[in-house]
Amino acid sequence: MIPRRRVLAGLASLPFASTALSKAAMAFSDGAPRLLGTCVRIEQLEREPQLADCLLSQFGSITPEIHLKWNSVENREGQFWFEPVDRLVTFAGKHDLRLHGHTLLWEQGTPDWALHAISHDKDWGLVERHIERVMSRYRDVIRDWDVVNEPIDTQNGRDGLRRNTFQKTFGSDYIARALQAAHHTAPNARLLLNEYGFEYDNYIEVARRAALLKLLEKLLVAGVPLHGVGIQAHLDLGKGPIPQRDVGKFLQDIADMGLAILVTELDVKERDYRATLAERDARVSDEVRRYLEVALAQPAVESVTTWGISDRLSWLQVEPGDRVDPNRFGPAAPNRGLPFDGDLQPKAMHTALLDALQAR
Ligand code: G3I
Image (tube, rainbow, N blue to C red):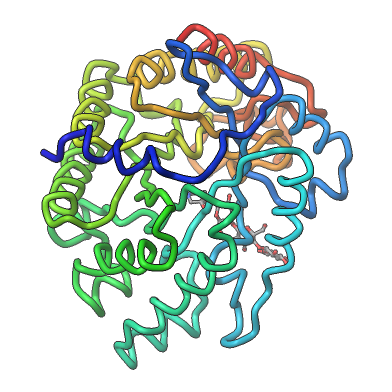
């Protein structure tokens, strides 16, 4: 295990001042602020002033939902499109919001031309140049970076790691190499792995928790620059009760390695849409309370970011197999797993979030 002190000592010298936040965006744990963040798309904020107002009154940190991914910044080889992120940076600066860097390396967020070139040429330089290009542009305004997104796969992976193009081409070492490239480009940045699927008591998530811990330990023992973990926390009402003891132990194991923990993509997938809205909202908020009760009991958990503000704009949708009453529920009606409804009215989940942040 890497002593927590050693990592923290490194972080203390970071040049980033803490962002001034609106009262609602902060809660306190032993005097230390815990941030509430959300993912955003700049064009939505520009189009909907009410959405921007809602964001500014409630959140202190923003994550680009899409526009920092490789397939957005360089969808065609050599043609760069930083404009939406630049606009987001201006917005964040104007309103004193913190920005979270999501994400440098994710197969699903990589353009086809790059995946093809990587498999064909086996040239690590291509990956390295991408990391350098994106990070160097934003290293003065973004401290925390999801360097590698979703590297774990215990079902179809190898040794717990996803068999993606990077792993197949460069071996499992690609994770360490990406972190090293990021550290080289932005020595003051905090570098994270960001991952989902750790919240429930089923054999897959039990194995995923173990696989992540194994990966973290391996990287830290090898001296790879890694400072934290993004726990996505896409909760799911179809997966049974959250095993709080197991989740608490998992977070403690990460904390014992000296790593920071950020809850990066909190939302709740419903499975049964037949109840009244009030009942559905109560189920969603109860799930959030159960999760945050254990997550925020862990002092290493620094922040909670929801994967969106309003149900209307959520990536979560009704899926085949979900229980839907066709008389009460049209196909376009959204999942209700975010703090605000489609009209930007706060729901029970909003109260659950603020209660949980303030209670700690
Ligand atoms: O902008 C195009 C639009 O022009 C086109 O008409 C439309 C047709 O499908 O696609 C639009 O792009 C989509 C984009 O969202 C904007 O709606 C992409 O196809 C779609 O892939 C993209 O999905 C995003 C996904 O990441 C992939 O980047 C989701 O919004 C976003 O919520 C999701 O976020 C991920 C995190 O990054 C990682 N963790 C899981 C999380 C949820 O999948």
